[in-house]
Image (cartoon, rainbow, N blue to C red; front, side):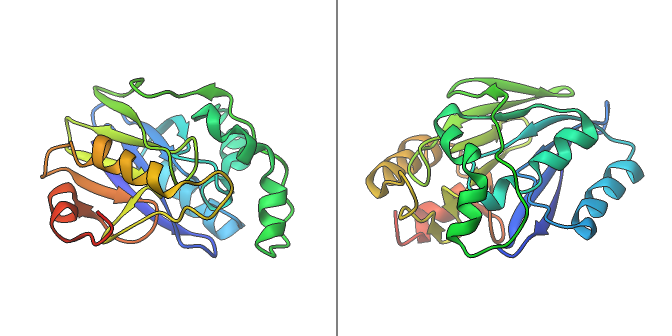
Length: 212
């Protein structure tokens, strides 16, 4: 599996494109685009690499991770895949923007296809395992690719930090439990690709993360 990272919007969210080099099937994770420059970056990358975008997945539905959902749905005719417990966040995208003082014309988003703990997603010849990691939001998920040895953690686990839990329905104890039980149980060599900032590994976070 190949991975490319884009850093978008005023929150510096990591948007990932994953693709199978054999089939060129691709998934976009957490599209955070807010303007034409950012959407063009995605379109140009997909075109220049000859990719067929087949999946649109949200690790959770906080506004910075779903700004680009509407564009991707329209441009590439894809359904939004996410955990249903974050449906209330997707549906209130304009209200989320207002709470942050943002004046961006937005419409409510919608989760079209539900993802649950234990589900699998195929991208070409590789399989992505869906792992439920609630706490940052009730519907937060991680996407683990055992074949290529990486996990996309959204805003659950960062390099040297964890996600905030002061947003609606966040819960610190739940997040710590999710990380310890669902993420730290992965192989130490697993590369962690977070929703913000640079990558790390599970082994590194076991050793140095002060929150764990």
